[in-house]
Image 1: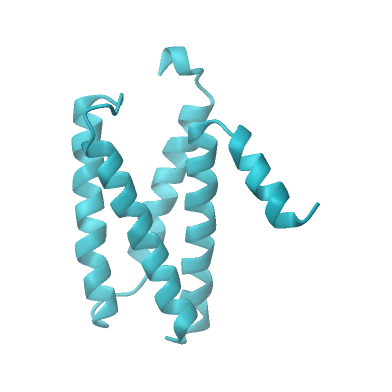
Image 2: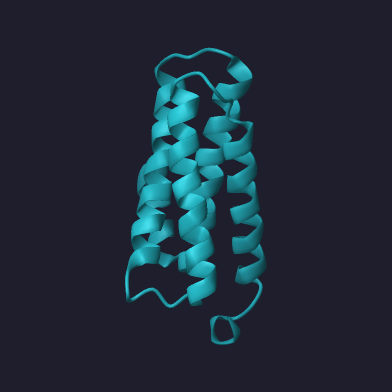
Length: 123
C-alpha cells in the first residue's frame, strides 16, 4: 500500500479534531520551512495559499448554522480567520513575515489538542 493511500485511509478514521490538527500541523510545517528558506519561490506561495485556503474553509464552516461550536467561540474564530486573510494579503505584498501566521496556527493546534483530550460529550 502506498503512503498516500495509507494517509487517505487513516484520515477517514480520524476524529474531526484529529484531522483538523493534522492539517494545521502540515500547513504550519510548510510555512515554517519556507520562512526558514528565505526564498520566495513557488513553495513559498503554495504554502501561503494552502494556509489561506484552510482558514477560508474554516471560516465557511464556522459560518454555517450547522456548526455546533459555542456562538462566542465561533465569532472569535471567524474574526481570527478574517485577520489571517487580511494579514496574508500583507505578506504577499511583502509587508509582513510568516511568523504571526505560524503563531496563530500553533495556538489553534494547542486548542485542538486540548479539546481532543476531552470526550465529545463534554465539549
